[in-house]
Image (tube, rainbow, N blue to C red):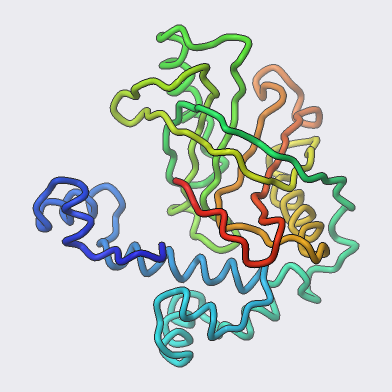
Length: 268
């Protein structure tokens, strides 16, 4: 997201003409390239306003704006409030979110990875990912890839408190024992080893938002951690179809940097 993501450069990577690439991209995403990049950068800025103490000017520069004023105008158009008011109202330490509203989250630091997974992208509300998992499960089963190494997991790229539900990106995934070629929309992904803050959520998936908020606060209370932009991981420790909702167990994982300003990079 910090690179020059111009239409000609992206089209060259995709081996299309700029015109054809833009037409295909817009058909698949519902947005033009510039609109898509601008929205993602503003949403990343909103997440940083919620979860970091960086200055608004620093966040504006990271989002590609050369001045506080131009960033404020773009942010207000997207979120209908100024960056400063958004931070006051939506920060994980906002007065509107009382500490008592969030359970104390037992959490720990953990090194996860490297992992090889096979994944299928879902775009839309996180509550609708079941069909995506069913499609992926059928493919994995047909290719004989289920075994003692198999772990179901989700990779969440967006914060549902920031990103409109129709644009939420999520990968349904299963661990596989070796690198392998994908097929069409189903692709392999290598997850490098990273540091994560982790916690176990017990209960319906609808409660994951509260669990993530509690884990985020646990991270922000520590002076030795920064929360990374790397997507969150969810490991599903039992199966929804065979487990009562109140007994579902999900391991949630937020990528962190152990030292301030350490750049672990971002994979997607």
